[in-house]
Every structure is written in structure tokens, then in C-alpha cells.
Picture (tube, rainbow, N blue to C red):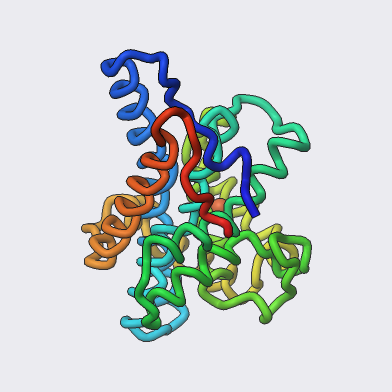
Length: 249
Ligand SMILES: [Fe+2]
């Protein structure tokens, strides 16, 4: 099935080369910030939560690499929706809610490996917006049916999104963000993950996971992100404004 919003050419053939180059460079910069920079912060936090929960180091590294890429599907969401300053209308919400499945399709295209690490990436990309109470998407999975990696990333993702400024909101104080996460235990989030996350935050300075030395898992995530960015970019500038193959097929 084709997503008309996903691969629509963004760089008009009537633009001169310099304008096209500038527009393309701006798109790459913004997507890197929205997807990878946020993803790397979530990866460091997810690693710390996983270790707090006594997951083995190797598993925590796989989880961190996957967390770096959790929003990969946003590469296929128009920037005007990702940066929309106000509340999203229903059609925008439908498009943005497609990003887990778009991301899973995209990672399947750029990552031909089938090792355990790749399976974890696909699991996290697809399930990080599922909710403990079954009200999430895309499948409405409930409780422990949601992969543990995705339950950890859900907490890390929301906390980072709250404490950072976005085009549509100001940054929350870390204490307010922690309160939100705790109030959402048993609803949006796995209560066990919330409890371990709270213990971690209360024992560690919030800057720990933002400024910590990058983990080696980020190399693998950056390589896959680069492949995905390049794939989507080339879809958008297909000759004569035609579309290339849609990633959902
Ligand atoms: Fe997401």
C-alpha cells in the first residue's frame, strides 16, 4: 500500500539547483535533530533504565541502539506536521500516528541484517507508542504483551520529549516531567519501568544521560539513520517529480 503523504516530492523541479540544495540541506538538518539527536538522548536514558532494571549489558546496548532509531518513521512525515505549532487536527494526527509502521518498513528496507540487534530495533520502532492500558498504537497491545524494550523506550521517550523545548511547547521542569511519568504508571506506562526510572532519576543528576559520553551503540544507529535519511531524500527528489518505490509495499 502506498502512502501519498510519505513520499510526496518536496523539492520542486522548477527550483534552481542552489535553492534545491539549500532546501535539501535544511530538511536533512531538521530531520537529524528531530529523529537522531532526540533518539540518542533517549538511547542513553534507555540504557541507564535497562541497567537499573539489571538487564545484562549486551541487552542494554542493543536496546540503546534501537532507542536511537525509535522515531525513524518521522523521516516520512512532512516537516510542516512535525513542526506544527498548535494542536494537530485529525488528518495530521492520523499521519503522525503512522510513524511506527512507516519506521518499521523503513528499517526493513535499509537494514538487511536479521540478527538479534536488528530484531530489537524493529520491535522498538514499531511498538514504542503502545500503552500499558492497551490504548496505544498501532496495535493496542496490553501490558506484558508489549515488548519490554518498547516499554522502556516509551518512558525514556516521553520524559525526554517533556524536558526539551519543541516548536509547539516549552521545556518542562524535570520535576514536573517526573510527576507526569509517575501519574501515568499503569496507564501509559509499565509501573515497574516507572518505578525503576524514578529510582534512577532520584539517584542521578538529570544531566547524566544528556551529557554522558556517547555509547558505541550510537555508531551503529548513526549508520542506519544515514542510510534511511539518504533513502528517503532520494525518494523525494526522484526525477521529474515522480515517486520512487513506496516503503510500504
Ligand atoms: Fe515516536
